[in-house]
Length: 346
Image (tube, rainbow, N blue to C red; front, top):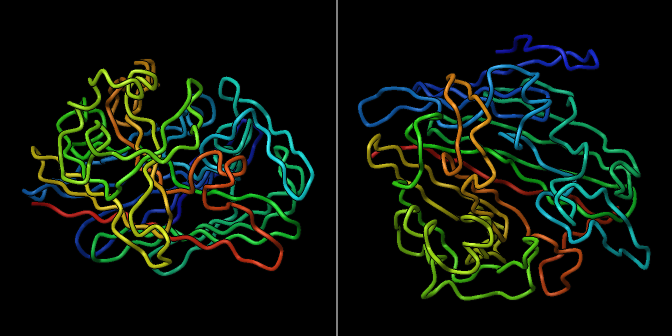
């Protein structure tokens, strides 16, 4: 179902698309930024709640959003000093995160209106990112498809083609609280991440290049455990990031098939979310930079630690890290990745 959502500050129309399934799950997305504004799923008693953070109006998404629910690109996550070299040419991107480039630049994919096409149980967002947009080379033809199944699976398919060599790393930046948005801390959420290693960062949150073992550290989520204990760890990496803001190198990351990457369980509601992906990495982020100034969809204030993000991706700063999987896309190739967020109860 499609309805008008609002107009941007420069007068562009934005539409909202509502996806529903036979089990009562509902997902709302808007054409501005491809933003997921709401995911309503039942708890163990059948009561529905919205489990993603967001706003109830377009103006706040335009001016205040810490990437709530959006498509991030052309390059998700950080690139050191906003620089990379491709085929002998150095490119300079806008600096928008301390010393670094973050999530595509000053006006990334999260801050534009996408063309939209309704399909059965879903919507396809598309746009052309022109050569030189935010400093990136090549005209990039991008499609992001959201579909909702009767198995309570929200599937996101990313596809891109280019007319010149470029770099691409797309993800969705939804913030989850399985008890419901605005319900407080996610400390009690129990998390599993299928990763034997993670990428430590320097003081600017750029990976050092090391693939460090998770064993014996707060980053070991191979067996499910509470998030809160690790957030309060004195581990140097946790202190530096004020919580978790780290990429995990997924096991079976060289497999092109969709694989289980992470599982989250919230014991009060009984809600479970599984994250499945074709990507080699996942960024676990505990909303460390939400500072209590944002009022969310339900009228409640959001604070640090009120949500978690599990952003499927290639490893941050890959264009400057030759040992990391490549994010280069050439004209003869098609960028194709898939991520599924699957909801259940126990």
